[in-house]
Amino acid sequence: TILGEGEAALAAGPAEMTARKGAKAERYVDNKRKDDVRLSNIIAAKSLADAVRTSLGPRGMDKMVVEGDGNVLITNDGATILEKLDVKQPAGKMLVQLSKSQD
Image (tube, rainbow, N blue to C red; front, top):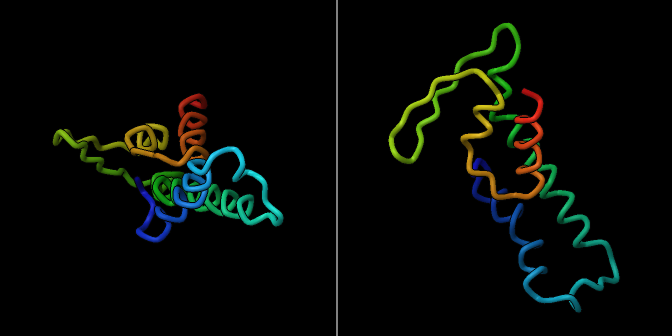
């Protein structure tokens, strides 16, 4: 994934832990889970934006992506960069799919 150490745990942690507890755990008095999910989505979107930010525009730079098997890809296409990332967060996956459909 492209999230930092603390961000990755926060992005996947609370929502996954709550989902594992079962349907009864879905009842909350406050909006803590909603806030956790919203924060997770914001962090994922910002992380993906940071990954492609420097490749956009007339001064866009090329990015080098090294895959697990050692293949090297050099591109400045945002959709290709995002496609090569291993995004686990659901909202992040949706943004990657959206970038593919815009091509």
